[in-house]
Every structure is written in C-alpha cells, then in structure tokens.
Amino acid sequence: MVIVVRHARRVLMLLVATASLAGCGWFGGSKDDTFTEQPVEVLYNRALDDLGRQEYKQAAKEFEEVDRQHPYSVWATKAQIMAAFTYYQSNKYDDAIIALDRFIQLHPGHRDIPYAYYLKGLCYYEQISDVGRDQRVTQQALDALSEVAKRFPDSPYARDARLKVELCIDHLAGKEMDIGRYYQKQHQYVGAINRYRLVIERYQTTTHVPEALHRLVETYLALGVQSEAKETAAVLGYNFPGSDWYQDSYFLVTGEGAPAPEDKGSGGWFFGIF
Image (cartoon, rainbow, N blue to C red; front, side):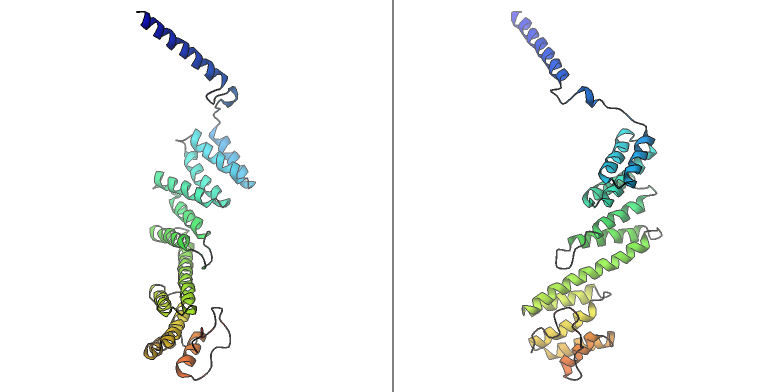
C-alpha cells in the first residue's frame, strides 16, 4: 500500500513539473507563437503582390501558407501551381520540380496539368549546360518536354515543347560530336568512329550529321580504310551536296578541288591525318 501511494505521488509531481516546463516554453511553445488563421483571399492576394514585386521567397512561402491553412479550397489548388511558378521564377528549379510533381500527383485531371508538365520541362531545359559538361539534365528536359508534346498535343504549350525537344536532341548530338572529336585528336579512331556513327544513326535530323560524315571520312583515311572513306564521302555528297563538309571530304578522298576556306570551329579539317 505504501509503495502505491509513493508511486502516485511521483506521478503527480512529474505531471506538475511537465506542465510548468511547458508553460515556460521549454517545449518550443511561447505566447507569441499562437496560430492565427487568415482569410484565403488575403493570403493569396498578398502572395500575388509579393510575386509582382519579385519577392519570390516570401511569395512562395505565402502561396504554401494558402495550401496549409485552406487545403480544401479552390485557392489551395491554384496556390500549389503558383508556388511552383514562383520557385521557377527565382531559379530554384529543384523546389519547383518537387512542387510540380506533387501537383501532378494530387490533381491529374486539373485543367492546369498541361502547364504543370510544361513548366517541369522548362525547369530542366533552363539548366542545360554547354556540351563540354554532363548532359543528364538535357536528357531529363528531352523526356519531360516530349511528354508534353505526346500527352497534350493540342495544348498551347505543345508547339514550344516540340521546338525545345528538337533543340535538346541537337544538343545531345553536339555532345557526341564533342567526344568524337576528342577521341580523334587523341588518335583513338575506333572510339571516334563509334561516336560519329551514333550521331548519324540516332540524331539523323540534326545539324551535326554533315560534319559527322566528314569526320568519318577523316578517321577512315587515318586508319587506311580507303573504301569506307569513299563510301562515306559519297553518302555525304548525296545528302549534302552543297555543304562545305562535302567539299572537304571530296578533297581528302580525290585530291581534287580544295578544302573549304573557313575553319568551321570544330578543330580544323585534317586532325593531323597527313
């Protein structure tokens, strides 16, 4: 009986002490941290005003507050896509993509879904770097923008998405050409040939194909494979008869005429073949 009474007293003392600590703010609370719900229109319009003043950090916070305080309102759905747009405007692409993925998951049938997919594609597209760097984000942009064109072909965003898809493809081809030229300069001709053939086969609609064919002619000649060089030059001449690249290849194969007078910015004509 004595043990039970003592235990009860200890529990009572602990409860009193806990209440005292909570009142003193030991558990993160304070009299100034009381939550005050605000009308949804006030929150949303304040966020729009901050967005107009390019105060993106505050605007994003307020759009998210709309969603937090009024999660079942029409404004909450609009605030989600606006928060993503605000992150995009401030170049916080990762945050924008996270917000867009959440919007797409929660509202797959919403009228702004085409725009959400398009904005996600733009987040990747605007991070594309020069061909000397890793092109993972270029592939992500290509995948995202292709999805816009495929899923929403009649949307206002489809035309621009298709244009940017072509630019992404051209950029990826440029990366392969950059690697191929590097291999060729290092006299690693098999590696160069593989890269150039990849451009011709996978990216045949890009602007890099004429140069890829010409570089193949150069590498085949460097390896002493005259027949392959002549066949490749013939393909180049058939498809791009008026190009400077064909003029260069024709000179290399036949010794007639002259190479094109201008260096086309890709390391010269011969890469030390002769």
